[in-house]
Image (cartoon, rainbow, N blue to C red; front, top):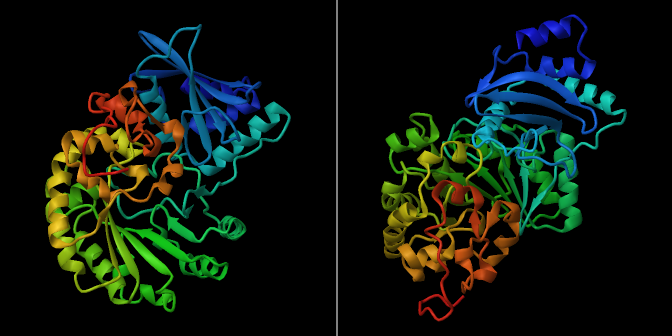
Length: 443
């Protein structure tokens, strides 16, 4: 890397290549990622893309960097970049090359924005035409999602917002334009998410604008910390009937909360934020994302939730989610449960929820395949699944159905299994539920 920078300083490297070198300059010299060493940096003007050659003793590959473009090939999608790999000389990609690409993505996320802009401009000049940059796109199923920021007070081990997502609207103009799209599409439920959307000071204005445009309901996905502030909810006064909060609380005890969120002494504040919102008349629900640290106390979490919310009729229940294997949930997949582990805790916890009268739900985007309830749990628990119009929101390229799914009675209403789950745990757990199976669910 030092030699490459010296070449750039001597004028022997083209402008686009120099811009790429400047983008990488904050990274340590002789960059090594997942056992690979950065050997050279160049520009593919036909793509156009920046190309980084990574080598190790038994193989090599090119890491390709390009601005987010419409219909561009990519394996990792950051906020402003697409990254993918190229094999060399017709050889297969080295097995651990994707791990190196993920580490590169993590480092590039910390790059100086000015260096990134210079890189894009240089690529445009090399291509002799402007890029068709990807604009933020609405994530739409039976809801519209607007991702306002990436900042958050927590560092949850399962966070999938650390991997590129389509629906970022971080400037005021982008948010307002997206809201106009919501009106045009006649969507009646809008979800503000992040990061942590309550850290965006303009959030109450965005919510008010959304309601003025005709949205029936606005949901704010939050960790609940700011809801505990005495005056924070004053900005939403008068919106109680049309604004709800989805609080992310993922543990029953402080010790596990700290392990899951990476931040100590916040669990009680989250509960206080929930109770404050309910006391003010807002509808609320909780999302509990299951991880290996938190699963053993799932039944206790249901009991604690029931005690905290018993006096509030506008509490909607607990949304129990399997961690979508993107972002940190995939990088830290040793902390994520298998379906077998999930059911070992979920099945008895659902019996507890039924006994104490607590509503528990799941949705297709973060649910267990339905066959898992037959293999490790109770088929009657399938009644916790949400309505099937969640199914179109599941990205088909990220889910698949193994051969063992053939002939399953749930084929029409099942989105399949996350491909990354299968890479981690295999497909042994997935078995078709044949139509003649006698059970309590009549789907």
